[in-house]
Image 1 (tube, rainbow, N blue to C red):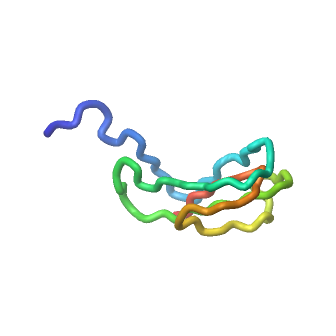
Image 2 (cartoon, rainbow, N blue to C red):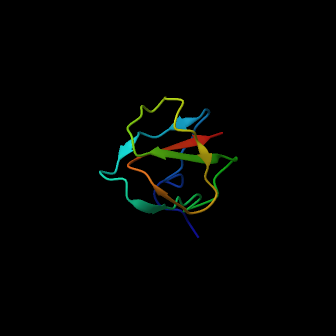
Length: 87
């Protein structure tokens, strides 16, 4: 089997924590949040996924709301949501 194209397609190389933007979903309805880790391959090294959210706006680097480690699908009533990848 031969790889055609970029064999590292979809790989994210980070050496420090990576913060996503705070996303405004428009309303604070109850939603399920599912993050698919290693969707295309297992990659190299270990990372920890974190998620946080609030009905009220917050800046990407605010101390609150607090982060929670993401390990499985969660249901929350958030309008604003942010993800973080920890190394």
